[in-house]
Structures are given as structure tokens and as C-alpha cells.
Image 1 (tube, rainbow, N blue to C red):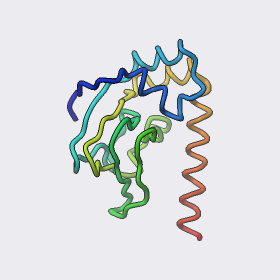
Image 2 (cartoon, helix red, strand yellow; image 1 turned 180 degrees about the vertical axis):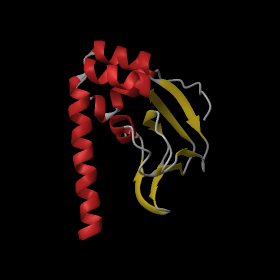
Image 3 (cartoon, rainbow, N blue to C red; image 1 turned 60 degrees about the horizontal axis):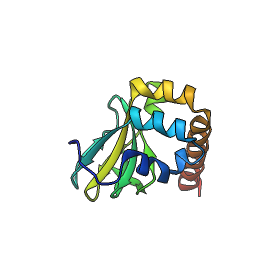
Length: 144
């Protein structure tokens, strides 16, 4: 993935992401410093199942599919995030994420992730809410 030059600022993008909706201006400024901007062309594998995870991704623009065992299990678009599980448990990626369209993302590296969670407790709560929702959706797919 290559660094991108986007017109809206990182702060503008961060404000639109549900995960950070409860953040103060100070917290958003911390996130802005911690995140990098990147782009991915359609077809790019952004993260690969079974590989080490070293970042959390926040989708600014574009669409991606999530594959587990070679089967599509979800689609993600602007405002979505992925990659947090590997940062929380230091286990390999549980799924692959592939760009369907060209994408713009914000990347929160692992080295910044823990300190951001400590500084922004509301983000940790939102991550838990998201993981709970994803678990319920996976259960529904598996057990109907």
C-alpha cells in the first residue's frame, strides 16, 4: 500500500468513523498523530489470514471483502475498521481483507495501538461493542 495525498485531513476522516464518535478534540488529535494514511488498489490483499497482524485499519473510502478459509464472510466500507483482533491477542490474522475497489485507509500501527487505548477508554468500549456484534453475526451464519 502506498501513502496517499487526500484533500480532507485525517482529522476530518477520523470524525466520520463510528469507533471514534465519542472522542474529544484532544483525543482526535492524538489519533491523528498516531495514524498514517495509505491507499490500496482494487484487488490488493490488505491483510492475510494466518499472517501476523501489526496494524488496525480504518476505511475512509472504498470497499473491501473479508474472506475466511477462501469464503467471503463480510463486506466493509467507509467508516468500518478491521485488524484489531491480532493487536489485542497477538495471534495471526483470523481472516483476509481484500480491496474490491480502490481504497483509502487510515492505519494505526501496533506500537501506537495500546497507548491510544489507554488514552481513549471510549475507543476500547467501542472495539468491544464491534467484536460482540461480529461474534453474534458469525454465530447467526454458523447456526442460523
